[in-house]
Length: 176
Image (cartoon, rainbow, N blue to C red; front, side, top):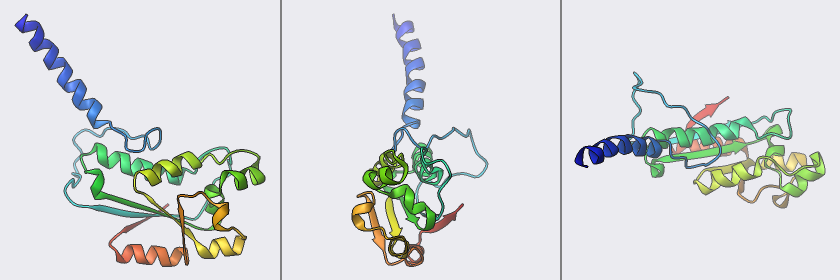
């Protein structure tokens, strides 16, 4: 009996550790892959502050903007690597053509005839503490108002202003 219990414990503990390691903060998005013993070690003790510059959309209006998914992957990947979620600070600064990806469902339906496929992801990102900031200049130029965008979105004076302020606050820029 003791041997059987010992074998069960030896099997269950690694399985539980793996399951905990693959925890997703933003469930259903931002798939990550395990990298065993990387040469460049991840600092799990300091804050990670990053701002994603999102100024473009992609041709398929039925799919999520992959740049939004990258933000989810960033969060999930670092939590999986052992960085406490409270030490991960992420912002998306949206401008230009990417404005269509944060339109409200009503406005998106008017434009494309379907619900906004990004809405659930933006809600999940926001729920995980990710700031979603929209360029006010883009909204004015394109005739978009606060009621036309997803409710998790905050309008700034401009994308440039938001990017500079965040970088002045020690956020690091990621631009794809």
